[in-house]
Amino acid sequence: MGESTATNNHHHCNQVVDISVNLPTHFGPKDIDDDGRPQRTGNVWTASAHIITAVIGSGVLSLAWAIAQLGWVAGPTVMFLFSFVVYYTSTLLADCYRSGDPLFGKRNYTYMDAVRSNLGGFKVKLCGLIQYLNIFGVAIGYTIAASISMMAIKRSDCFHESEGKDPCRMSSNPYMIAFGITQILFSQIPDFDQIWWLSIVAAVMSFTYSSIGLGLGIAKVSESGVIKGSLTGISIGTVTETQKIWRSFQALGDIAFAYSFSIILIEIQDTVRSPPAESKTMKKATLISTIVTTAFYMLCGCMGYAAFGDLAPGNLLTGFGFYNPYWLLDIANAAIVIHLVGAYQVYCQPLFAFVEKKASEKWSDCGFITQEIGIPVPFLKYSYNLNSFRLVWRTVFVLITTVISMLLPFFNDVVGILGAFGFWPLTVYFPVEMYIAQKRIPKWTTRWICLQMLSFACLVISVAAAAGSVAGVILDLKVYKPFKTSY
Image: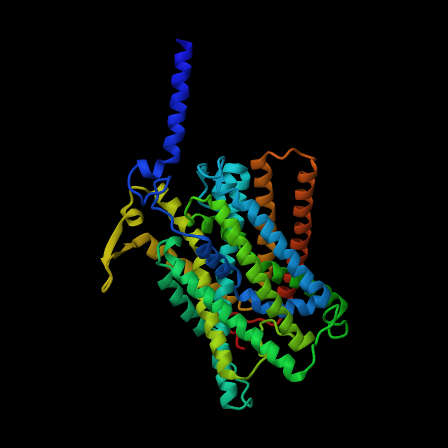
């Protein structure tokens, strides 16, 4: 009797395993995933496009300045180190998308879900707070960067017409408002899955302007026949010793900001189809995008430094390192604006989704929050689902970020602070801790010690970078009038 029960149980266990393996085919239509959501269609290339869109942001344009602070030795070395750390911790993070089995474990849809199922407790709230504050800050940084590029187009045309006689001063406010209006329209796209086309356009644009910046740098170097710059960076004399230290720290923050995409990695991973296991696809995508972005960063940063030396501008295409050919600069700056429109959306989607999910859980019977109104789209077969709460909340979000951008238009220092604050917890600390918890690595083993040392080293870099950026903001505030910024 006992034996037959055991056999039966064993038989049942086998059956259960079979069902879970073939779940999508047995249970309902082909286009449903194992969690009952519509089947994910992403692959290595769409994931890489999302990452490249998120990473090669306006961050690339400040790299020449960052390398100028650090010099020919430390600059590229720091960049390689950052790329290695980010790639390594991203592979740890990719393993946290599913809890338990890498193919059939429970999915963690967001970064916070991953922290909840691996670490739990207070750390979940802390992670959410840091992640969403960071996204909020990035939205403001992107609004400012886009307005600066729009103004650069207007200014380069003005310089060209007046042949450099007119200083061409103008206010950044109308441009920020224009960018805000565009974001209000785009932020009505309901979901991450539906912005893949925006990501691909944005990724193409980021290559366009980075290549133009690179091309102009090469042209300038070959024209003068001199590779500028020095082994140790900007010389003391041009800046004071204290300034040199603060600026080197801020350069670390700029490079950290240029690499921070772990913050939306899990959300991107949730768009990838399986099999193969999502973590495999994601590791490939991370490797491809890290290699592509690092090669690009090296070229843009180093060529910009070679062209301008210690005088490398904070933004390669708008700091007016280059004046001619002016039409080429206009194309580059237009590409930056289009890219930032896409990048803003890729970054903000996790925050939008989080607020909407919380609201619908809390007020599930409120029509304003849950009801979707189908609006037929002319010339297309499908209708657009309008949700009143989504319309109102996302519009308010964009309005707030736009107003703050108009108040604080020197945000590259503040973005340095955000890069620094977000880098250690989101890119290093949480992935390392989750990996240790998931793989149950015992304390004080060699592996555990190495991971903790990596985490500590990155903490030190983050603190230094934050200090440098805070010093930058304090200097900016001395000469500042709200809403009155002109360039």
